[in-house]
Amino acid sequence: MAFSWKAVVPEIPVRKLDRALEFYRDVLGFTVDWVYEERFASVSSGNARLFLEKRWGGEGVQCDLYVEDADTAYAELKSRDAPLVGEPEDKPWGTREFGIEDPDGNSFRVHSLLEPRA
Image 1: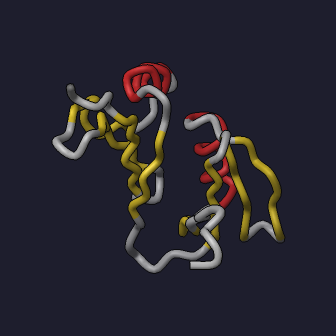
Image 2 (image 1 turned 90 degrees about the vertical axis):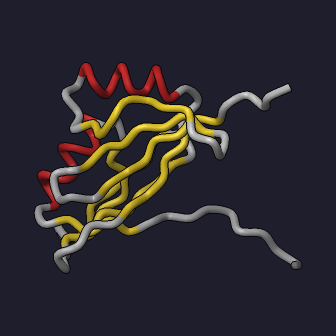
């Protein structure tokens, strides 16, 4: 292949953009990059970027977010009263992960890579 993908930016459907921006900024710690006509916005944190779009078809999406340390992220998000799903758990595919749900029912798995086993 002559090229490689530089980034993936999922579009997350939300019912109320202002409520979603508050959640992603204040609870999950994203920075609001821009808002367009009160119906579309971009949030980011480090190398992670999400688009939030005011549209709702009745079903949420699922996304995977990677962090350096799932336990540290879990503790900080818990202190912010984030709607956590489960506690950090080692998975057989080499990650430690837990879940989060946003106010619109979109779900996120938060992962950190486990050290390779010797």
